[in-house]
Length: 526
Ligand code: GLN
Image (cartoon, rainbow, N blue to C red; front, side, top):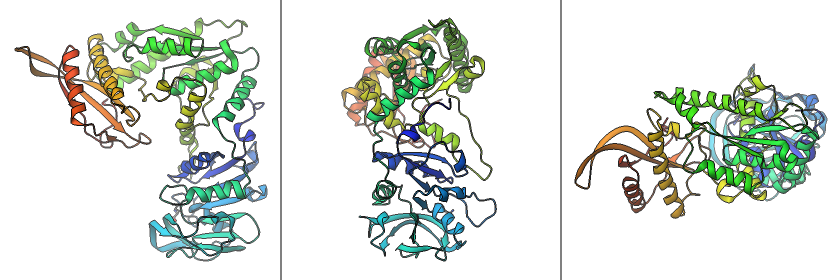
């Protein structure tokens, strides 16, 4: 993005989390934001001189490495020149100890799980209201000496240096993980650090974010340039489009591509909500014949996904080329609904030789179109996007909608995707979702859908033999979609749904419920 544009981290007091590759690093950022302190994560190799903003404080995360081994990552010592409070967590504390005397070695035994914390120095501001609580440990290395200039502030049975603090400076180290929910007072400790010690303002709210972000977009886009973006009817693209519309009005052009494998009445609903409801300048392209034509005869799931992805790009580019901005200029920007977890994943420190993975939500588009990327949600977690959507007047149902895969029903119709097959899957899905909503279960479930299986089964209807297909229902609960469990419906609920589907959807003779967790299964069938 342009240098002239002020970053969010320059507007809100920001705690910088330097990531040493712990699986919990992003949780540190999460916890801080939960009490409205803005936090951003960067790789531990970040050069402080290259930061364009000054953090209010720095947290060094945990990590899988050992500070004393060659090739392990180390922090830029310029962090100490910033004169801001520093908190090292686990590897982060070992790193502080290594820098200040090298007293770190392999411990006699690993310490993994709960421990009770004894605060030895009650005057330490980090431990305000945190004494004698359960903390969660996960380490094999240990401090065997107090680093130069530090004192002990807390101990646990196995860790004589469970927490240390610098004698004079605001530098702290803790062996346990305050960011995991198993650490009882972890959030309080992080709050003590961010608000009391770093004096960070806790004003990171979506209300404040809206204004900052709109001003940022206006500055970035300027007074005349135009922006395009794809919308799917999902929460991320809709909230992104709404922000763009607020910022630059009709100079933002949203394009919705009907790929022929959307859910029942979806295109009509998206059109109504985005145009009538939210006032967004939207073009709907009906490309269903093109998509279904290209999918003809294809049964391999990966091929289906590729065809849909590529066709989407073709259609989007063609439509974008038709848009002629009033200014006579070319379209300059592409809106992309990147969220913070994608950003974290792409910058996360994953090994001594740092790999930065670039991600493409709409792969290939940029190369051909030479558009600059605009990502208004790149600082936000999903729940923050939802909150933002509610604040900006995006309808509640849309804000809380279950995720829907890019290839749509094409991967929920197993085997060949024909209009007749899509129709069956679509109708069965609509019944299932309507019943879930009627039973008040929609929000308890993370994702639910009906898949059409490419097998036939014998049935009997009105004394006649039938030989029709099978619907598999799937409903899962999950926090992060990395692992998932199936939802435990009442039998009476399943009975009602099954009965409605076989009675109301032509072509279905049998209904089954998928009771596999992820792993080993995935959420979608293909
Ligand atoms: N790898 C280090 C250890 O085993 C740090 C672990 C951690 O940060 N969770 O002690």
